[in-house]
Length: 93
Length: 251
Image (cartoon, each protein chain N blue to C red):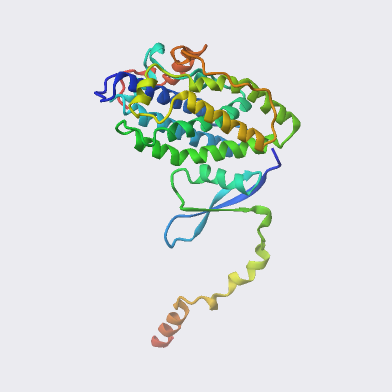
């Protein structure tokens, strides 16, 4: 058999739900990957649609790219900071 | 048979032959869980095995109220499976070739039952066909890819084909009840006609893969379904291994 590639598998359950990553598998090509994904990840009808994506084709950003944005609390828009600020003003602290 | 089936004994025998084939092919495929060449194939083959066992159960349910007893604990002489379905195939290449050939035959057999006059049979056939097209995809894709691998892989597969193609014709060995099944519209064709379609389909696949081998199809042997292969007793015993721990247990 021709060399195997690693594929990431995504399923879309139904309706408006989004595709979700469910696992990975090895396959020789796209056609085999879809067939194996059906049997390995969808044999109980877990998905209505299947995507398979070769892992080699995925563009990857490492943690150095995302790290700075983990410390920008001011970008949180859940209102907690404003609420705390107003509480402090009310209480004159 | 304990089921008050409305089918005549001849038609029951015809349905039984297909059910027993499905049962044993499914059981043999399930054996590969954990030992297939790669993990994805462990799962895929066993998923297909479950489908085949499901088809067997659906047919057995047309014949009996006690499927487990009927499927697993009959006397050997009461089975009507063909030798191609019964024989153990511990070599991967043999299993893959049987998977391919059996699913070609299944497609023909189920299609012949879609408009069956026997109660319950058309619904089972429709459901089975909706699954079988994926079995065909699985076997042909895997075989096609394997044939384009190393020369050793191709040699082993072609050898397996040359070994198993003659034996595969036992799938078309008729039971005594076939004539009645054809006459009453239970099936749309004789096994001889189905065998011709099978040979054409096999040759079409071989041609598309550029595989040339020596095979002169013979007429299906009479009486194959009345005999059991060597090792059948051990195989049936293995299917009963857990049941025999406590035959009176309720599951």
